Image 1: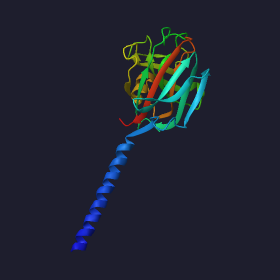
Image 2: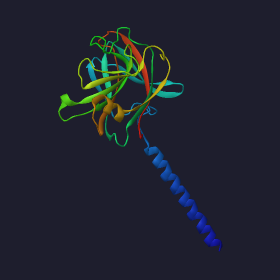
Image 3: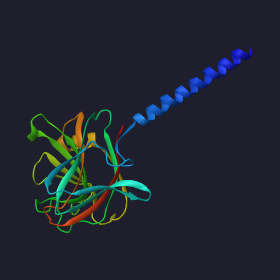
Image 4: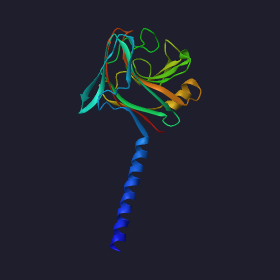
Length: 221
């Protein structure tokens, strides 16, 4: 009898541990971390230069590692290539902070097409001119909540997630349903993403900007 009870207790304990493991896996699968910078900059990030090179480096704030970007009349991006389904992970979340805005910055003109901070999602096409992107920007003059085509190409759209000086110097957490944004902006359904990018640029305004990024994730709805 004692052996039976002991065996039962062991089996029950194993079952509980298995259920906990399954639950933990299910919870973790709800969110996939692109990069939280805790272990430095993920080696999957690639630099894309447009004009000069923005300085991207890992720094510590409030005891946590974050990504700092500093642009001095430069424009380069960090691109993280990742193919995933918007049906599975439609939501993109991150937090960011800017030190300053750009007085000459204006998403409506080529001369002002600079941003202290932006996160953008790339939707590749086998024919490169048909590649699209949604840029989530910390706008200078474009009102919060509005979106317009890039002054360079209609396949790239700027969405003002933050705008103006109200939250300068403060960490702000963002959460966007990319699938819904794409449907609203381009008027059609899209199923997949090819890459996510970070960019702080000041080449057009010939200015300087500093920003911080952290906790970049994709999530289930």
